Length: 422
Image (cartoon, rainbow, N blue to C red):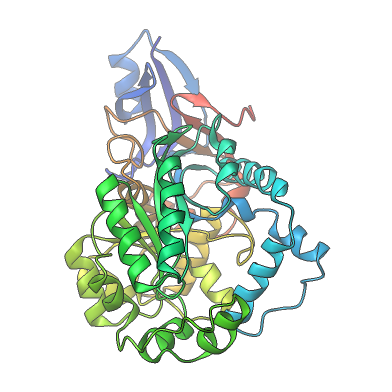
């Protein structure tokens, strides 16, 4: 039976907000959207579900997460890794030590905790990075959609080929739960050029989405330009790569990746802090998505993404939380609120909400299914129940302000409330 969901405000994202809005759901799909009085007249036999003084809008999309690291703070504390990192590379070394010092059987429960935290904060789709592949079973019964990117790195091409063969066996599964499987070469500095090209080409031939950390820190820019800096002197010796230092590439991170074949519409570039005007133009020209993680960037003191350049060139922008190794929560609502402050005055609240919904859905291949309340799309939506509602004209600014995470009252995925708070 068709169900008509009513709320004081309905924000489709793909259309203007509606005062006293209604959403008709039939058989797990959106059948109609509009003013409540009109839809109640048009569908008198529909079952009614009235959320009252609430806001109904699409689920959020976390386009870059490491949910297997949800328990990282507890792991770090147990190992005595509690002091603040003094640099980006020092932080990477800490992440490596903590992961190596943690039993592998801890990764699956950590991933499951990340899934639950994501759902509770109104997230309906993720671009998740996974380094411990057996933990993928955590998604088998999850209602989340999106892509699970299998992460790989290495400087030895021969070893890389063996790793890629193993990854291929996992990719043969195509999906895990409701997520597509994808491929994530970690970053330009943790893969040799030959292995990076091999991974990117393999992903292209397998027709899977790819994701890569790119231009995150000044240390990365220095390394790719001159094969120098802390990555060369601290990270490479730490992981036993001191004999694999490449010649200077004399390229920016974006230019380097572009020449390796890594700029295309099927790739998610993540962070993009160390990017100039020429780089932004190149990203836009190839149709790649840039996933911004402002809270992580601020925590690690690597700089602020050049949002003004991205917007000027028309780059598709999405949002991600990175991980609890560099962020305080997995809530995209929290990311939106921080981004509004961090990227002022270059970006509007309306654009941030689009980044967190429809843009992220586009990056993960979910357009037509999730990201907008549009007839024919999947019945995916969340309901916020704030103590006080704003005026309709101030809805976008209200939603991009702190405090929204705690107001998530319901999350419907495929027409089913997966939170069951009511």
